[in-house]
Length: 295
Ligand code: NAD
Image (cartoon, rainbow, N blue to C red; front, side, top):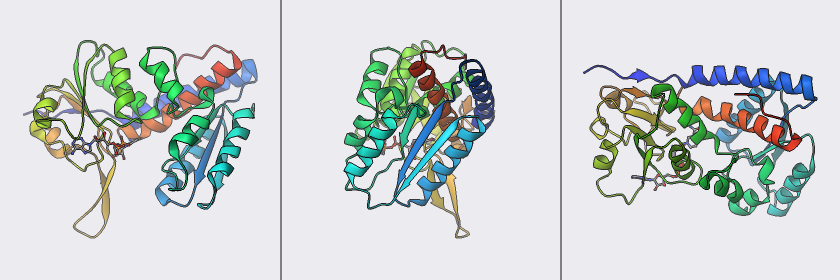
């Protein structure tokens, strides 16, 4: 059997980031508008620190302003809410991202709801979730937006495709279902209680795995020729005592059956940050009342 095309998320993210940099230069030049992204991180989770550093670098590389707020793990919920209120009011800040997960003593939902929806570049605020679900302009979550862009690379027209998403989280599965509905896919949202998950997955022309279980989706879950988008990022131990990253899809098996597939790493991951920058440009334009350059 022939092998699937590998969908290159790194290359697509690079070209999107180049267009964003051009858009930012145009906004700065024509409208003196410098999109600004504030990233708030609490505690010293090493994985979160890595994400935040790379977000900062990418933001600055795109010509945007970057504001980093690193708070100790002992920060109270009220202190965090006060910081968010300041960022909501700061005209130089167009996007606010609070890095998840938060320490246990802070309520995630209260924090997300405190972010001004117009600056909610993660797209997690219930207002943006509602706008997305009702087909109105919204700031949509970055990983699902990036996943749709990757799917479009492989199948230019998604209309009418049978799409199966495994995973129903608020940050990936559910918003992705809304975005794929907008693309006129027939969407099935599968999850941990789905009966005959392999059988449901096999119906998919477009199969998305967002579960958080290493290599769960096997080759015989994939319809021959299907487009497979692997959102999962799992670190597993290797025989030599090291670790490596794998997705939620058994890549070695699925690549033999699929028509196109994203690798891990180098698939959805790089698109997430690029889409965060795109959302920040979108937010800045909406707040300033300026037409968004085409991206
Ligand atoms: P989550 O834990 O919030 O949700 C997981 C979902 O998977 C749940 O809806 C659950 O019902 C479903 N699930 C769990 N076990 C299952 C099973 N055995 N069978 C079927 N469904 C099952 O996770 P999340 O935040 O949506 O993230 C999912 C994965 O995507 C993780 O690996 C995460 O690291 C990764 N992720 C990647 C990016 C990126 O930028 N590439 C961004 C966000 C999340």
